[in-house]
Length: 187
Picture 1 (tube, rainbow, N blue to C red):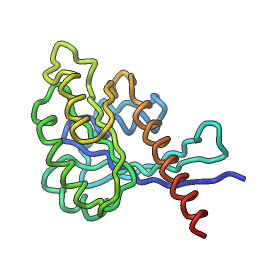
Picture 2 (picture 1 turned 60 degrees about the vertical axis):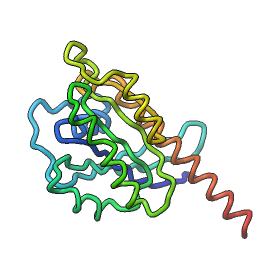
Picture 3 (picture 1 turned 180 degrees about the vertical axis):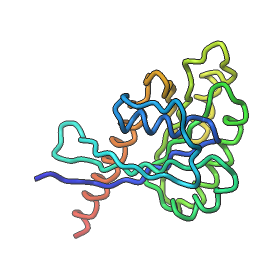
């Protein structure tokens, strides 16, 4: 019998960091990269079922692709309260997208209601090596400071796109399994 576990993952970062492209590449398994797209207004929610290796379980991952516009921030925080997982995304060619991450993280964390929030920091647009402003070292240091795991890649060329999502799914499965076992011991 198959076990389906649901998880809410916020994908958040500054405008033009490439969040929507990243989510679209992951959902389409690398087949779709929007050359032209409309900026996300508020929030887009998509799902993907991911099998957990060596188990009979799957995680139905609800990806909350959040607008990076400050105008929508309160709305996003209200509708995406109590996330299971977090993916902070920044553009390696934009200091602004990197510098806003600490504030975004603190806002999300304050709405997590005391839950230990598992997450990743994804450095997007790593294919733009000649335009890169944020070093991998700076990204790793910020990830460590926030208690996140650092990944980098490019939604455009699909490099490194799947790894952070699969990492998050495995982390969520471990959390779910640990909580389920703890509840069985209490019963």
